[in-house]
Each structure stands twice: as C-alpha cells, then as structure tokens.
Amino acid sequence: MQYDVAIIGGSYAGLAAAMPLARARRKVVIIDAGQRRNRFAEYSHGFLTQDGTQASEIAQIAKQQVLAYKTVDWQNGSVKRVEKIEEGFAVCIDATHSITAKRLIIAAGITDQLPDIAGLVERWGKTVFHCPYCHGYELNQGKIGIIASSEHAAHLAMMLPDWGETTLFLNDYPVDAELLEQLKVRCVVIEQRLIQEIMGQSDVLLADGTVIQLAGIFATTKCAIAQEWIFKLGCEIEQSAMGEAIKTNAMKETSVTGIFACGDVARLGGSVSLAVGDGTLAGVAAHRSLIFV
Image 1: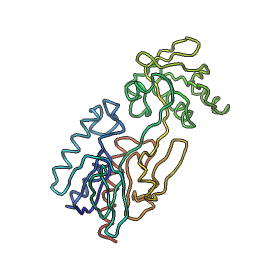
Image 2: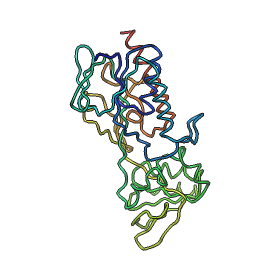
Image 3: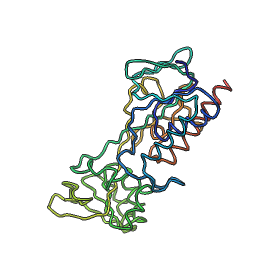
Image 4: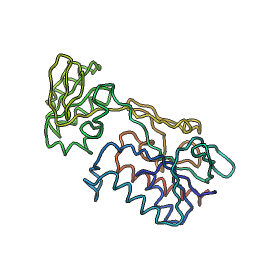
C-alpha cells in the first residue's frame, strides 16, 4: 500500500509525529516493534499534565487517540530493510511484506548499553536511573550514587547534589583531577573502591565487603542505534561520549532528503516531553515537505 508518510516506531515520538499528519488527513502508517525505551520504568515524571502517570498508560492513550483518525494505520512488526525508490521509500516489515511511502520518519529509539556490573540490569528503571529530572525528585533527598562509566558521569555527578547527598563511584574509571576538585566543592563524596555488585533495593557492595545503602543510583549509558538499515540508508550519524544519534537539522530532517528523525534516535539524553515535542515537529515538517517540494 502507498502512504504519504511511514513512521517507524510507535512510542511517544512516533505517535506525536503522526498527530499533525493525521489532522492534515494524510495517509500514515505507524510500524512498531513494541520496545519502548522506558518500558523498564513504571511511572513517567516531568511531562506536563502527565506527571506521575504510568509510562505505559501515556503510550496507550496516545495510540488510541492517534488511531481514532481514519487515515492512520498501525502495523506491529520490525523493519528489516528500507530502500529508496522513485516513489519515495519501500519498507520491508518482518521480511514478509512491504509498504511504500513518499516520506519516512524514523522514531525507532535506541538501546542502552549499561555498565557491566552485577545486579544493575535487574534494577534498571526501578532503582537505577539515567535522568535525575525524570526520577531524582522521588528519591526524597536521600543518599544517591552515581557510577562513573563515561565522560558524562562527572557532569551528572555535579548536578546530583540538588537531589540528595551524592557519592561518585569511580569504579576504576579515570576522572580528571580538576574535575574531582570541582566535585568536592559540590560536596560529592568520591569513592575509589571497586563495585562488586548492586544488591537489595539499591545497595552497593564494594569489593572489600563494605555495603553502602542508597535511595537510588544513577548510571550513564551508551546509546546505540540497533537498526542496521538506518546506516544503510546513509543518514549522517553523530558520535559522542554518550553514544550515537541520527543527525538532523532544526526541522528534524536528516541528511537524506525525504527522511526525518525524532525521539531518542535523534537526540542524546531524551525524555518523554522532548520526544513528543520533536515528534510533533517532525510530523509538521514531513507534511510541509509533501507540499513545498
């Protein structure tokens, strides 16, 4: 079937991108593999009017509202291949069927590469977090840990004392001496002993047997684009200490004409509110590109 726009990814950014297109009565398909990045967190915080709402509920309501528009279709499945064709793009879904679209919006999200520490993965999104604006307030100014696993960790450690008494666990990660002095000015405790395991709710077991009890832990992840077809399309990718993201201009268009990107796949350090804003902009931009060729 021929669509005006195919949106790959049906989470917050993808659904937000669909809304202005649907309201312009454009034929849209949303293709979703069912893997929201924040599926490990029960509640979403910091999104105006939805603060404290279950993350899954926000996504579910958004899907219901978008699919109420008759020109929007939904397909469950994983995109395996995307090819540039004369009419726009051919999108292969689950290697079983394909659709074509004049424009493409990539809202496929990213995967988080977590530090290799026993007990961390099981607590990800529950008592181990990546964003203090999303989860810091609920720690009620308790003791907070931050695990150094990237260049961004020291920056995050500088911020965290606004949410609670903070300990930076170096865990053998090199941090510049000047930065360590700045952290001490912020009253951040520097812990040099190695971490053996995260246990209990969010307790840190050190290699020497010491247990440090914390209200919550923050860990920096490396964001990775898991979809090989994105690279094959030739979209320019930005690389940084935080990972990789599709490079877009101010209107969310990629380096490939006709392809737009939004959400975490196109923004390092995202949130639900930023994903919705970027998605809306991508949808508007894609619509205008259909008119002003």
